[in-house]
Amino acid sequence: MGFFAKFEKTKVKKTKTVKKDKLSVIEMIKRDIENQHKLLKGEPVLNAKKKSIRSWFKAYKEKDEKGNDGVFIPFVGITALFGDYEMPYKDADKKSILEELLKDIESGQGAEYIAEVEKKLKKAEEEAKKKREETAKKKSEK
Image (tube, rainbow, N blue to C red; front, side, top):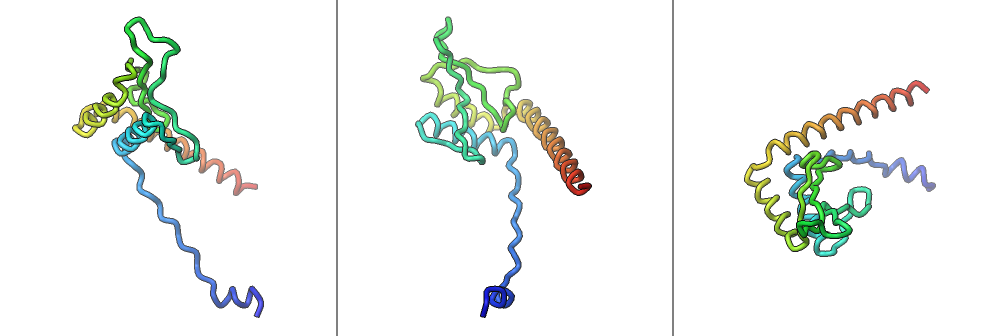
């Protein structure tokens, strides 16, 4: 008996892929804070595309006049949580900054920043959907 004869007798319909529920902005922040903790420990952290994620701590080449080592800029996806603002930090404070941010997020603080990120992510999602639809339409016209 050949392959196709066996195949016809044993073929099974492919399983459908199940769509994952999207994470909320708060869930993304919590996940990303955990990933930042891993980076601080020197552990490699990869994104969905298998590339290393970047640290939210951007070091200065030299300390500034107040003794700060750099600026803290947390991101949700590609959107900065605090918009155009950043927070100076000292190296010794990195872990506590992440812990305090997580504690405040869990207690409901920072709602105005989260709402702004949600708005930006929704807009980006709508634009991406529109672009996918346009691409699909162009492909079907060919």
